Length: 208
Length: 208
DNA sequence: AACAAATTTAAACAAGCGTTTAATTTAAAC
DNA sequence: GTTTAAATTAAACGCTTGTTTAAATTTGTT
Image 1 (spheres, each protein chain N blue to C red):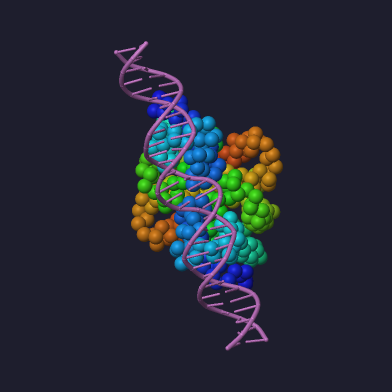
Image 2: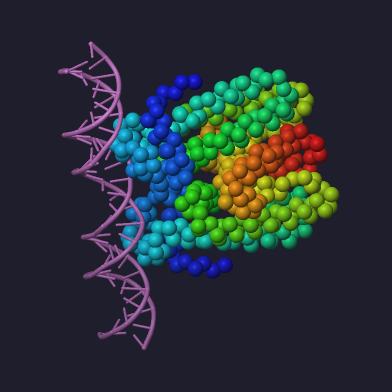
């Protein structure tokens, strides 16, 4: 997939991503970005028009191919529960290796200030939900999954668990003795992912 | 419980809570707070010292009695699963009726900027985890709960699900046709709470 | 009523903000 | 090699920021 941004823009976007994620949109100044990216302050306005439009560009830049990955997964020849597990893995993996942008999305697009820019993001979420629905309904038809689950609330459980864990990173680093970044990442890739898969599986299959 | 803040301070704190939650800490100015609270800009410095210390005071003001509520729950004479359900209900209820401060905690205390102020908040979280552990271990001893769950990851699932739902409020309002604030709140109190309880119960009891 | 302390005010402070301007350098086109 | 366009720069713009100051007002105490 070809990007619509040139090298300089990408350079700016990637610095902005790091800083927005670290200190928030309002907590980051254009001069701040310029200094780290080693460019002139005017370049942001020159290339993106404004700070606000820089944020919009950043989101487009980072979220454009998730849908494609999900579609591919849907067409694989797997049992529903394995698809669910793969979907969870895909989500966690993807978000974990793009922590910056997802933290930004999580933060900035839930404040009242930025409700209008929500359109494209909302479409993305609707598409993701549709994919999940397809998988679960398949499992329900096969009689594997129970039918009294509220499907739209499953995404919050998957993503929310990850986010809440990650948002409290210092707390869990301390609690679980994850002293290095590698240990932390590995815990996510193994234990946290497994916990989420275990949770969703139990929810979908357990008969009370 | 007697508060350490006088009327004027409380007036400022409650305005700050609303604005911080709406627009973030960095997105809210002292003049902004002063205008809404109908006080002079200097009063914030006068009563709290600085904007940063205003935030700290706000957290103390709002989180001081959660521990007490949890302790009370622990001592009730209930089956472990009922305690878990009540704990979930307590969490959701409490956070939902103090959305402001929890959104602020969620936002502001996960950025690198404010890692140092984390102490008191971290203690609160550790206490909460301890309470949850006590309940679950009780259920495990009784042979009701399975033993291969990762207890510290259960809180992220409970709170993360709620937060992710709430952070995407506009999306779910639209998706689930929750046109009024009442409908939205009612959905949380019934469906979302039930979903979380169902999820945790399945996780704790289901044998694969 | 008189004094002292606490509260509230308007004004000022320096610093930082996002953005624009106009001049200069670099690159591309012919 | 000259011309035209794009990219980059330093400086300035007007505005907002958090905080301090010093004077004015209110409140409490004797």
